[in-house]
Length: 167
Image 1 (tube, helix red, strand yellow):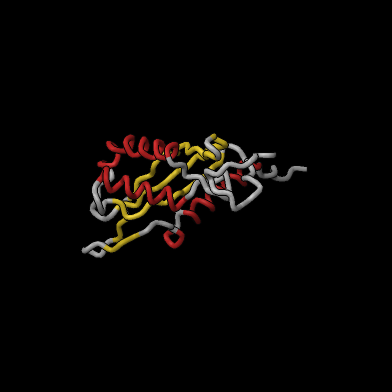
Image 2 (cartoon, rainbow, N blue to C red; image 1 turned 90 degrees about the vertical axis):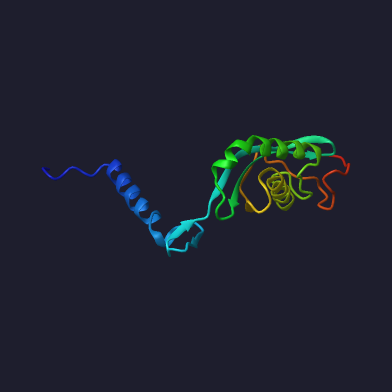
């Protein structure tokens, strides 16, 4: 038995990573928004990623869960991303304060925040902090609940209404 040694798993893993890297980097699969500049070049729309924030899920005046939310702000053309770094703490503080004051709780689940209300609030805060027209859109990229809790039995119960929480 003087044959060649069998290839190791490391070799197969390295080859798979190389093939996947080449596939993911191909321009046809790029998932970035592009717009034309005057010179005909392609440029990426500027965006700013807010780090993960812990948003409370409040039901009947009590915190029943937390959802970790990551958002991306899509900026308008010509807006400098560096200007957002200085005011990001103020934006994050406003979001967390509003989450406790008027919760972004959905009536049908305790695993996600009310996306349209949260993004609308963030757009309003961006307009007041950074100036109108600087942020084109807000996207919730990720929502991870701390606990996998079931909502109340009745789907018609609103977030602030009182009811018994029988597990």
